[in-house]
Amino acid sequence: MSIDLGVGILPDAKTREMAIRLSRALGEKYRTSYTLGHSYHPHVTLYQATFQDYATLLNSIGKIRHLSLTGIQLEPEDLVVTPSNYIFIRYAKTPELEELQSNVINSVASSRLKGVPTIWDKNKVALSPEKAIAVQQWGFVEAFETFDPHLTIGRITDDNMDCNEVLSLLSGIYENIDFMPIELVTYELGADGGCLNPRKI
Image 1 (cartoon, rainbow, N blue to C red):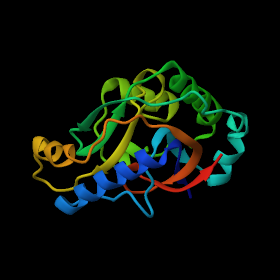
Image 2: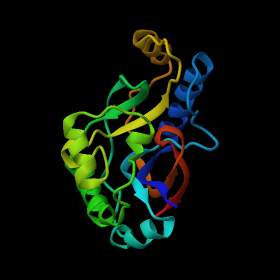
Image 3: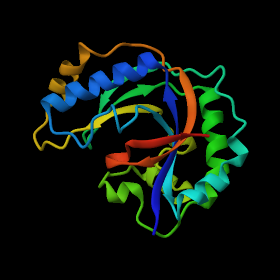
């Protein structure tokens, strides 16, 4: 028995509300694997991996309970549609955000379950050589150099999807506002890495 878990940050109310509006608009036009709102929570992931159980992760996060989010804010760069049909808001990397992620990974990565199919294997996501190495070393596709801070709006499951059409649909809802982190949380992974049942650290 194993469980896929993550560590991430939840946004301020304005960013959360915008992300939910974007996700709902996407779900009204396309088939998606989930919609942000009641069950799935807008967030930025700092770490994800497979663990033996939830207790294993909780036992390893003691070192990061003291971490402060003061002074951390995420500046949006653009709205992205990936080759794997994920739609997300990409944020700029800052030294403060990279330090936060480094502290999280150094605290929890060693307790992950090794020798099992990764989250990206399960979700059939093609990885670049650099990201494949990150998964092998740290159990996470976006560790350190490959960190790509983003808030996922959803993943389209329709076969025929036009990227420009998606961006045009969302451009009228998207607001270029900073993501202000309000909580550092652990969470269970839902469909395509979505955040379920976040628990404050």
